[in-house]
Image 1 (cartoon, helix red, strand yellow):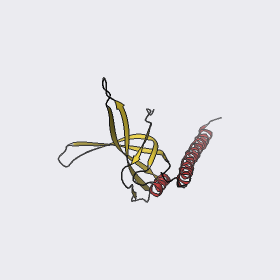
Image 2 (image 1 turned 90 degrees about the vertical axis):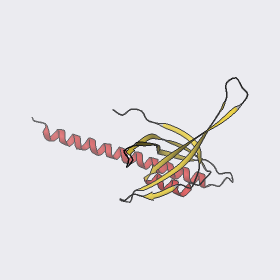
Image 3 (image 1 turned 30 degrees about the vertical axis):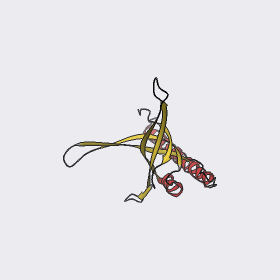
Image 4 (image 1 turned 135 degrees about the horizontal axis):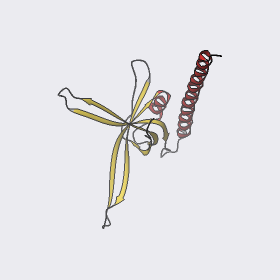
Length: 156
């Protein structure tokens, strides 16, 4: 059983996204984002601006869409899951890196109000719908295969 691993973050892209394809031709796009949190210090009138930086990874059609519509400074809302990569350096020192694997990315309107936002949102929704459709098809195929297997092994 999988545990729950889901988060939503909103922030701004901090630099030009990195787009590449894997050795097998699968698209990957990494969006570095900054998320601001404002709070008031206890017993004072002073406010603090806390900034956290995250690397968001997108794959497949979503990666292509992010590469097309992302630019430094653009606001995004990301729904995804946390992934921790672990490795050891050449000296044997353990290292780790936390990334967010995006399942959905929503682009915030630009300051100049261009209509690209609607086009991007539609493209992202289509990519998500395509992913959901593929998952349903995979489940249907698995159910059909299981039903065939049950019929073949049933003894009358």
